Length: 204
Image (cartoon, rainbow, N blue to C red; front, side, top):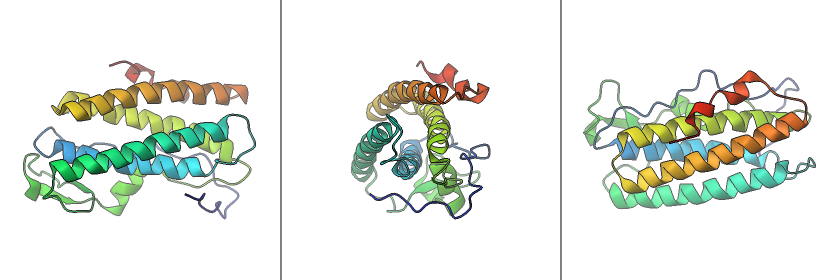
């Protein structure tokens, strides 16, 4: 997977995640399907973000990006296989619950909109060559934090042991990588309060 082209504007800054909503909806018979589709989109955003720094010269950054890409690509593949096995009647496109829809009914699902996909992927901006390291490190911190939120949501609402195991694995992996991302940012002299906003979600 090649890296996307750099932003044309030199003012491209760190990803703004303030408006992103990762709500999947209430528990019900379609919850696991909705969660899988949302998490696949979220992971896809991590792949896109990582590709920007694959060949960066800064020690450790490219290697971490490639590890994130490999791990999340494997999980995307697994989630796609589970989706086909568990929901053969589901449409091929990602779905979300309609407003006031029945969480137990397939008829209450609709195609995930472009804005929802963008929110899940958390790709609100693209970096310049000059800021792409900080853009990646800070953006992936927020991205991993959102994954923690979604994983805890699954632990509260899903009864599927496979989903619950994946949610637990996501929490462990994201916690480890958040600590590494913070270490890299600290090495660059950056330590902001928002870097710690998801610490309460490190355990489960």
